[in-house]
Length: 257
Image 1: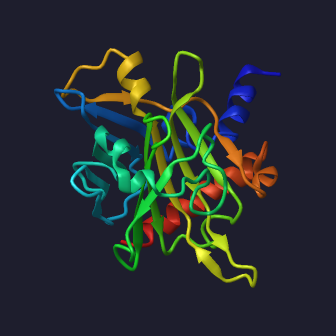
Image 2: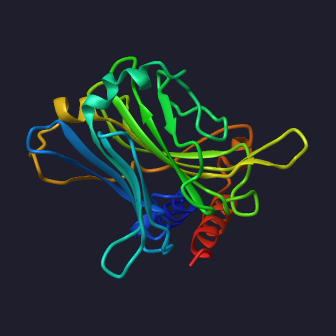
C-alpha cells in the first residue's frame, strides 16, 4: 500500500491523537507537584476546538479541589484536580464503597476500585464534578466532570473513549483521560449525562519520573484510542464514525457558549 495512503487511513482511525494535531480533542495532560511533593495538580488540557466557557470547582474538605477552567484566548479548556495526597488516608473516604466504573457504568479501566466523592447536589444546572481517591493502595487520584447537556444527541450511550498519556515502568497505564457517554434508565430516559474523566497514578509519577518540584511536566497521548462499553464494537476500526463522534462532542461542548 502506498505510504501516503496508509498514513491517511491511520489518521482517520484516531479520535484524539491525529496527525499534525488535526484530529485531537485531548491535547495533553499537565502534572505539577508542590515543592514538598505532597500536593499535586493534574489537568487534562483540550485543544482549541473545545471553546466552552464553563468554569467552577468542587472542594474536597481541606485537601484541595476538582476544577473546570474555561477556554479563553489565553488558555485552553481544562479539567483536573489540585489535591494534597494525604486525602487517601481520610477516614470518611476510606469508609465509602469503592467503585470500578465511570458515572455511566462503564469500567474505569484500572486494576482496582476507587472511592467516588461528590456533593449532595450538582454544582450547577450545566455540570457537576466528582473526585476519585485510591483508598486501597494510596496511588491513584482522579476527577470527572458530568455535563447535563451531553446527552445521546452528542455522544452515544454505552461508550467510553479512553486515552493513555503515560505508562509506568511495567507498561501499565499511569495517566488515563476518558470521554464517556450518558447512561439511560430502563425506560430510556436519561439517568446520567456524559462527561470527561482524568485518572493519574500520582505515586508512580513521583517515584518513577524525574519531576522538578514546583515545575509543570507535560504528557501527550499515545497514538490511537481505547474504546470500551457495549457500543464500542460499532466504532472500532470505523474511522468515519469516530470523526463524526468527535465532531458531535465538540458541537455539544461549544453549544454552551
